Amino acid sequence: DTHAEFLMKAAAAKKHIFCEKPIDLDIERIKKAIQATEDANVKLMVGFVRRFDRDHSAVANIVKSGDMGKPHIVKITSRDPEAPPLSYVKISGGIFTDMMIHDFDMARFLAGSEVTEVTAIGEICITPEIKQYDDIDTAIVSLKFENGAIGVIDNSRAARYGYDQRVEVHCDKGTVLDDNNLEHYVKISTKDGVTVGKPTWFFLQRYNDAFVKELQDFVDAVVTNTEVPVGGHDGLMSVYIAQAAKRSLDEKRTVLLSELM
Image (cartoon, rainbow, N blue to C red; front, side, top):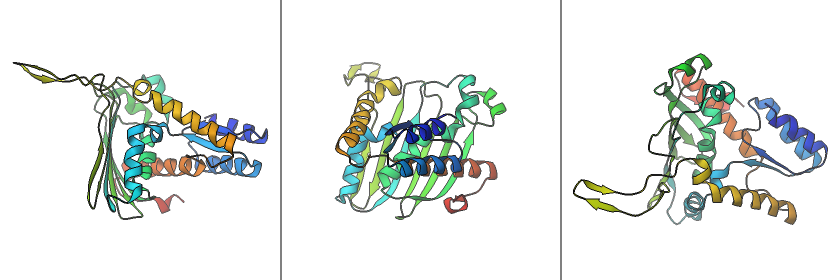
């Protein structure tokens, strides 16, 4: 709950700002914070680290180049290795705002288009106690984009085999896919079968290099006085999509983003 507050204080002090997602859970506070940075003429970058992953960004760049034609389907799988403690769930804002918000940003990034419609379904499959916090731990969200593409995101709070992070974009001329990073790529073959390394354990291992590049790109934007790669608009749109997903889940219907704007 402190992101927007400190963001506005930093803007008032004429400091360029790197803010972890989400900027806030309240749309109006997000708009107010973004306006504060614009009025102060300071840069605001929002921490969607997955955009800076080498392979994820390669997928986005291939799609953006147009070499694969028009994107048709964006598929994202994001599953944590173990469920968070209830103390975290209580203050997290829920699976859509805390966890899947990364995937909402990645979906916009990969499709190169804004989301127009959101449909969500979900269930409590792992931690029954989270029901008291009006949350779920397993969810699937489908999206429609302005450019005609459709998307599907699946999230789970507990994939016992590691941090499952996969993206795929199916286009006119083929499919671009980024699979999991593994602990190792050694293939072991025995009479019992063939095995390879498991996915890396969690986000610090999976996105270690991306965290470094993210901060470097922020510094570069400040030093060279150029546009930051992920700005306030990106932070705002991801929260809009998260709120649309929650409304869709609660009301059991497709929600147009325009209903929230």
